Length: 246
Length: 214
Image (cartoon, rainbow over all chains, first blue to last red; front, side):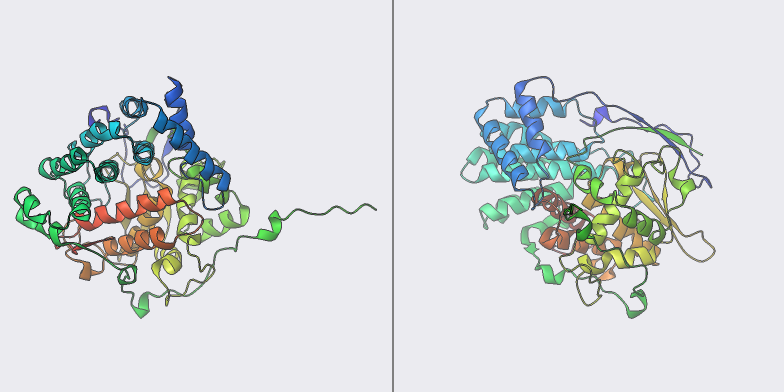
């Protein structure tokens, strides 16, 4: 996947005083190749139906059910993953999420391949915090989650997760696989320990934090004044207006 | 001045089809423009100044991140610091960040903040921010950069030594976790993505791992 990385070419001055200029180009159409691809696009189109969109969520579930009945869902996703731009992380992630929701055992090989694939860190600016390679971790973690769902009652999927632990050196992806295995079998730690370097053994004892622990510490001096508050979303504007005949 | 090109990505899977129409609202654009100190020179020339509602362009996509950061708490309009970071994170960010600039970058970074005495305080957002991140991830990045703008850098290269250091990675994890826990106006898939992103940070960005997941 990483071999298709597109370089962003620029003759840039990192601290330019004026802005940069940007041009768009269209990507190829990815979902026109087959009926299965069309169905996958339909599922993706409703992946982010929000809590108020009951019809959209229904259409998503319907598309998932139909994908589950077709024999080439996994192969279709694999084919499109091979063509989609590496930069479109949300699309790659979304396709794996759809496949995980389908729950087809045929996806096991694809999930395992994606989860174990090495991550190229060569293009990370070490001065910067977040890196484009974070997206590669996200895609692999979604593949791990797909394996985890299959692993409930499937020994091959469980072994695939153990292979990820053994073969994937990236700590974040490896941790996702370890936690998935621990959820299936709390005693799995002794088997996994041999694959983990000392500085990653914490994964075998990690706990799930309570949301109420997840609080940044903010000093009184950092508590900014409440100025420039955002506009309230004006529901009155969207209410239908009754026209009165004179 | 640099020039660059981008490929229009899928608008649904990033959340831009969901959030993009929401930012297409003049009172919000006016407010966010001032609150985060956007400037025309940093967002024209293809970055979206001429059509803020075009969710294929960087300005709309940045605005979607701001929208997500601002309106995801079920307790909005409360932004009280006695609440959780989902509630006050937008308030903190807009007060800490001095200005937001759209830039090409060189493909190796997502965002970058400069701060300190005798420095031109600013936050630059690059193509990866606009085109390789989902909307909630962009909101998380804004929290991260706001923590830097507030004067807190990393203390171990671009990682934090520990959870107790209370740096930008901790703040970003907290925001993403609360978004996954009780974010409103969003989707279960985006909450899953936010949770996964938080766990990726927990596993990789602390020299002493915090020892928990979310």
